[in-house]
Length: 321
Image 1 (cartoon, rainbow, N blue to C red):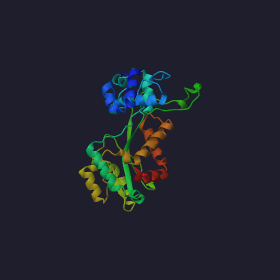
Image 2 (tube, helix red, strand yellow):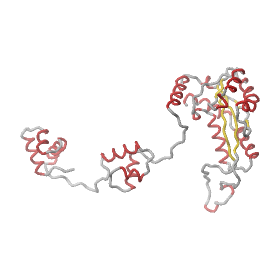
Image 3 (cartoon, helix red, strand yellow):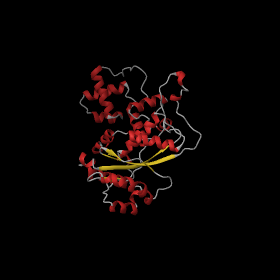
Image 4 (cartoon, one colour):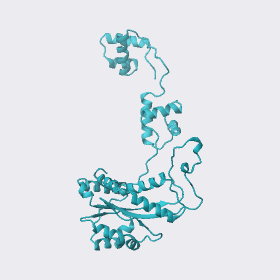
């Protein structure tokens, strides 16, 4: 961008002193009104038409460049740093780009994994929130939160961190064991209520029909647990084994009232936190096992170790979910 010469600045100041307004001076010199106004003000402040010398190297990113950078990144959240540099026309190093992004608080972070929610499901979640926004703690304490989860033998997929000295690399307590055998998985069902929890049910492999689920879970475990609390409400997700005609009829015949749970909403279910506690406990104890029977023993033990106080705290957090 061209700048006013000392002669042009002198002319602008003289015209201004003669009473000419900023606009005609700007048109005559073919500069913006802002440039003319600043030149006149600067002369009044320092009494010179010469541009003052500035110290240091000029900045690579002027305000306009910063706005361009921010707009591009906000529209292209997953762009790599190299791709950002290729699309933002600023002649600067990769470190300078990185610093400017930090100043804009646009740091690279691992995206959190969340279930995909479409517009219809989003509306259902909003409706659920509005319907239950005035529920008290006593209302939520009537709910029996249930869910299925799975656990695996072999090594844990999460990154395991241990504290060790340099010469302790190969200590058994500092290793995350891996096994050559194929992984086996264990599916379980459990439920939590205020001040209590169900037995942990080890689901049989290959038996995933609604009728089989009724025989494995509803009849021997859920029925008595539900009847053990007055005015109880059952919470289940929208899996087919829970929403089929057979499952709905059984619950209706048993007089079981169900909470109308929004689809794709595991993040609202407090029992998800219980599963996470169990998996973290296994990982922290380095309990990686090779056979399914040992895995079953470990998982059942971890379920029993979950304190009722922690369950109550999770349930009481529902008004803030």
